[in-house]
Length: 272
Image 1 (tube, helix red, strand yellow):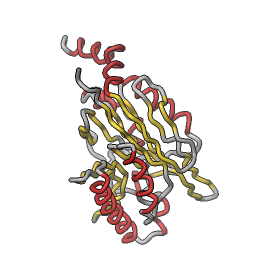
Image 2 (spheres, helix red, strand yellow):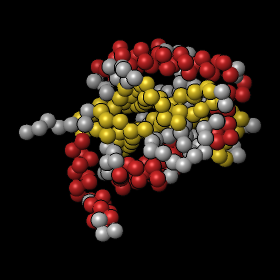
Image 3 (tube, one colour):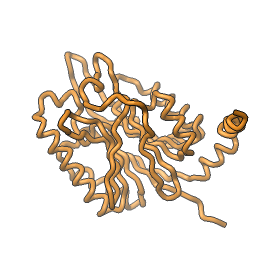
Image 4 (cartoon, one colour):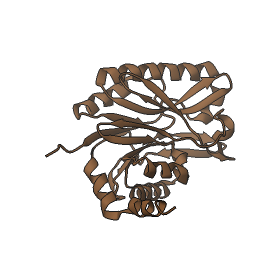
């Protein structure tokens, strides 16, 4: 009988790390004791929240990112783990909002394709990420699991989820920086998407506060793992902590077989 395909995932719920590496290694040691294969960090954990950049020298942002990338490369080798972590890359045309995937042997980057563009939170204007036709998000295989990396705001757009179905993705990694008491909306969207697309969703949301024009931005945590059945298997509350869970590929396959959403679509595609 073939052995079950399992993947151990971890997600860190932290405020901005600044240049403090010791906290990261503290959690990594615990994760490795439980054989974690992947570690996900939230948005604006390796870097400060983008609204704080106005008071920072550009070189400081660049140096912060450089040091953290170097650190993650070293830690990935030391602990034989894959990091998925949002990071700000500085280029000639400005700051680029990206997500890094750092393994013991390589580093690759996904540039966020759709950014928030609201008056109070305008990443689209602040960052130099180009507006272009949508491309496939970052995907990779690990221990028999197909994994897709999706930036938090991109969760709201169906083309990304169509790729989840087309590519038979087993796990979506979703780093976020959610605030303003949006707990319930995020929980319900994530649970619904996991169920409809038959995949696990691991969301890492940051902690911390930012005050602006007498408005307090409170990043509330709620880091969670949701199963293909749309059930929250584990959730962190609003304190600094780490989630570690074992994923079972059989749960993904059983869900797809039982509900047959994909099969119904495929039958109709064949008639075209």
